[in-house]
Length: 70
Image 1: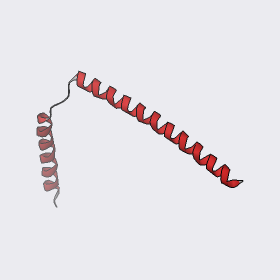
Image 2: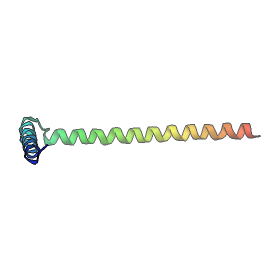
Image 3: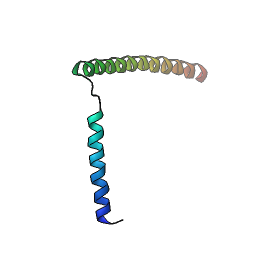
Image 4: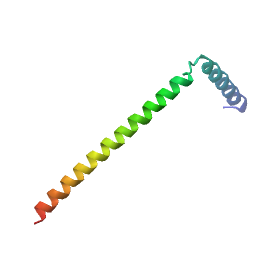
């Protein structure tokens, strides 16, 4: 492939990308804030939930190991 064809493809890609970006419907500031808060809250909930599960299962496994080690 020649350099001219590569340059034409690159230019066409940039032009097409710019045209597509004009079609995008961007969220409002309020929507962005609401969705960001939702993601943070869900992440915190899952972190706490998984931490509790990890604690429960590790404690249970330790007790099982101690019981069978005797």
